[in-house]
Image (tube, rainbow, N blue to C red; front, side, top):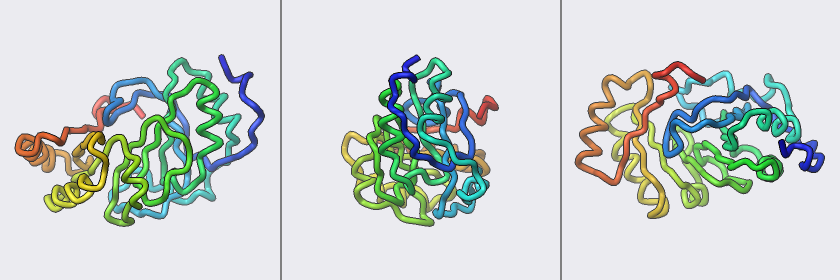
Length: 208
């Protein structure tokens, strides 16, 4: 346990929930990770499955030290900061504290705000309801486009043109439309093989 080596840090964030599970999506799918879901979001996706995260004021505040101590009680050393929209906050001190405890630090964001903090992996999932900023697109390690209807393929290509050549491109069916959209995504990837399929495996196996 490396928690005792962390300097005292009282910077605090609204935390809707935090839990130990397996990453269900993208390049790190299947790996054990500690998730830190911050409260607060103004992107407003109509199909969001965690709308209770939107209002930051209703969630308890946790200091960096408390967050890290809780995460470090588990053996995995991947911490995923998600939301809500976590990039609303300056996450520099939380990233530093997690790094000091030996964690890889990942973020899942819409990219609607500049990303502040030192991240080892950035998953950017742009939303039509609030456009991503250019500097967030440039930093993305993986681009995850949620496919809700057929128009999302063209929209995804528009954003794929704005990320780096090394960025992994994923198409993921929106959960409520998965039966309809998954076959379309498979066909699209067969015709456009630079894209890959991402599934919400955690929902299939019923874990957080």
